[in-house]
Image (cartoon, rainbow, N blue to C red; front, side, top):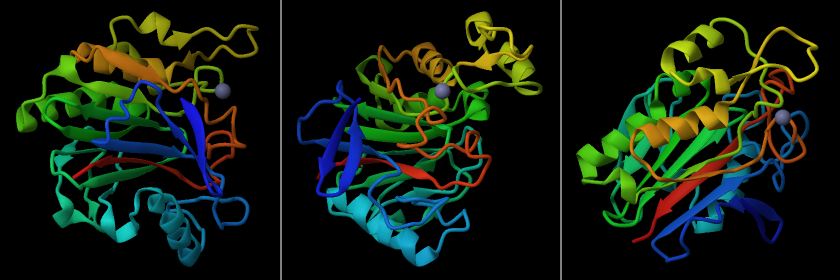
Length: 264
Ligand SMILES: [Zn+2]
């Protein structure tokens, strides 16, 4: 990923995504907003105890990067599932219920979601001109939310998985993601090659393995036929200067955003 700035707003973009003027995307950081600690500063979620007015000011600044505001983007009510919903601008300013995957092929439609350790999944089909945005923590990975997004784009937009450009955004990395049950059993059941996803702790401080969440999501995408996947290389728990981390900050934190816009 590359770190860019517009005025006081830093944001990240994936290097492999084309600058063809037909798609725009950004992963925001926690910097550049108005909220005080522990939500400092660009918290985009009202699901935490931040002041609503500040959250809306933060959204105006973040979504304003692409000329949008909270009522001109489609949001999702995230539930750690694998449901994927096709949306249009008719859903602008609304929260699509119980959906961790949003897809659209309507030019002008903008998708956004919020994160604090779970994985942003971004998809772009340059052939059928369609996009997707997903949210996958360990539950989304074992339930194959990334694969469900690919299949939904196939079924609804005629996308070919091999045409898709995919990105796995900043999430908690294997360096920091110690897991116990039920995560271990679920990962073993969901991935045949799970030994390389549940990693032994290098110095033996703990008997509990570390889960490689970004790699698990990448494997979901590859299994669904996607060939081009860029990993962010960023761990949210290592970089609480840049991101919110539910694990590292013991739940007292905000949510950073990711956004994908299909250009008209
Ligand atoms: Zn880490």
